[in-house]
Amino acid sequence: MIRVAVDAMGGDNAPGQIVAGAVDAVAQRTDLEILLVGQEAAVNAELQKQPYDKARIRVLNATEVIETEEPPVNAVRRKKDSSIVVGMNLVKHGEADAFVSAGSSGAVLVGGQVIVGRIKGVERPPLAPLIPTEKGVSLLIDCGANVDARPSHLVQFARMGSIYMENVIGISRPRVAIVNIGAEEEKGNALVKETFPLLKACKDINFIGSIEAREIPHGYADVIVCEAFVGNVILKLYEGVGATLISMVKKGMMTSLRSKIGALLVKPALKSTLKRFDASEYGGAPLLGLNGLVVKAHGNSTATEISHSIIQCVSFKEQDINGKIKDSLTAAREAGESDGQI
Image (cartoon, rainbow, N blue to C red; front, side):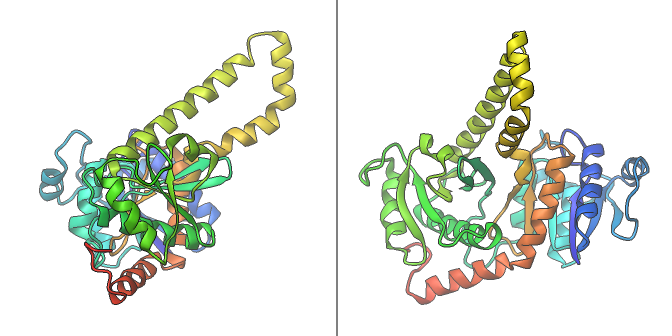
């Protein structure tokens, strides 16, 4: 059994959609147990609206909620009985294998590092969401945790991202690229120019060079490395353009009788294609490099994304991603690659 703690109070749609997602995840997986962490009365009220396996979903009371506008460091220190802090402590003490939250991003990032703690040798844990592409999915790493990163951080991101894609997604020797404004090695800002030769020298990384933003949706790389400012801009633009295109396609199909008839004919194929480019189908973003698994879901997550975020924790645990990250860092050190000189 994989035990996942879920922040029932986090996000715009809590607790209703969070609870519904947990119920759906348990219905899909027989090897899953869920601890819904939050205000007991509110969570139980949602659970009573639908049938669920009482042996595999339990409610753990947490009286406080960290709001998105609160300063994250102060909130984590002050609100010890919040759903985020209680959930993180479950992972820290081995009472849960993973923690999923759609709540305050800042509090999740702070709690992950301060409460769960980093794997020895990990300089900065990155947020790494899967994003849809023409060829499947790519891992965008980092998308929000480390705005001011150093070259050694990006090298570790590449290593951790490669391990995740190979073991969770099943891509052999995933292609790693660094986000740049051109394909030439001499292009880019100081961070990219310093990082490029370090990645090129890593024998355990299948580094293919630079990738421009327009190439990302085509799936030219499996692991897309960048610091968090660039990564977050890419992610938000990706989501915005995707949502706009879907809306425009739907609106265009309703403009005339002919287009409506055509829409009926292409609806099955179109629905399948659009589903592939729906970010909620791929779950949340794991915060890689911690002593336990923490997954950050979108703040506006529906039951679908919460369910997928919970289920992705099973693969993470089964493949022992943290153990593989530890082994990779140890091997790099033994090869004489110190943290700042990889």
